[in-house]
Every structure is written in C-alpha cells, then in structure tokens.
Image (tube, rainbow, N blue to C red):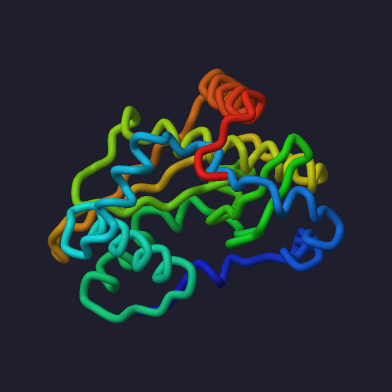
Length: 214
C-alpha cells in the first residue's frame, strides 16, 4: 500500500537535530524527558513488572503500539494488520492533513525537559502537534489524560524553539480494533480551555521537582 503521508511533507522548519541540541542545550537534553516527568511511582513499578512478561496484556499492547508507530512513520508494512492500520489512516485521517511540517523531532524547553513528538502538521487548518495511539478498543478521554499533558509539553517546547510556527492545536489519533477487517479511527482534539489546563498540570509537575527514576 502506498505511504501517502510523506507526500504532504513540506520544508517549512529547519528542525534542530538532537546532536545539535545536545551541544547547544546539554543541560536540557540531560534533563528528564516528558514521559519521565509524567511517571507515577506506583504505576511505573507495575508497568515494569508487566513488561518482564512478554505475554502480558501490557507487553503485547506496547509491542502493538510500537509497530503501529513504525508503520505510520515509515509506511513499511509487514502484516495484514499493518496494512489495515495504514489503510484506515489514509482513508479516515489523511484528508484532514493539508501539510506535514515535522515528524519524530526532538524538542527541549528551559524549564527542564526534552521529548520527541510524533507529528507536527496542519490539521483541519491549524498547526497541530499530533500523537498516534493504537489499541484494541477505542480509547476514552479519561484514559488519555497523561498523553494530553505530554502533547501540551511538546506544544510548549515547540512554540519556544520555533516561534514562527505557533502551535494552536493538539490531537490524539486513536486507531483501534483487534480484527484486520474492522480497524477504526477516533480523533480527540482538545479545546483551548482543556489545553490551558493540561499545560498547567504538566508545568506544575515539573515545578514540583519530583521525577520518578531520575
């Protein structure tokens, strides 16, 4: 199947490489990542225990998610499920993306964090930071709260590093389904009030200085 996302790639931003950022902002590259700041000690311990068993539900879900990310990043498919995921994305999502500005780029911010976003694109007419989520069942907003904070952290950093491209929107694209014949999509876009709330929650977390495992 043809990988259509790359056809919408434009060269609007000369993104700084992680290597360059490590020289220019070594203290920020060495700081905790966004995901590290968002870890909870209890849930992180449970997650690590589950990941030691490759047959656990969580380990299988992580593997599934990584494969879906790989498909959407490269367009390379290795199974019927990969084909179904890519087809769903091309059919349901691609039409709302007018141009792709960046994919898998590293960001930093002077409050003390770094991270890498999935996609920066003009989505439904607005510059947006977008995250992919793959699951067997449709994800509800209540299960995505930490990911909303993650997206707002990326937006905050992106707007600091690249002020010429103001990110006004964040979205999570959930591709879900356990059967190759029934892969569906759902997009959650935060309202301005929700964006402000989740950004504040993340910055308060960083301000607390409490970071699990760092």
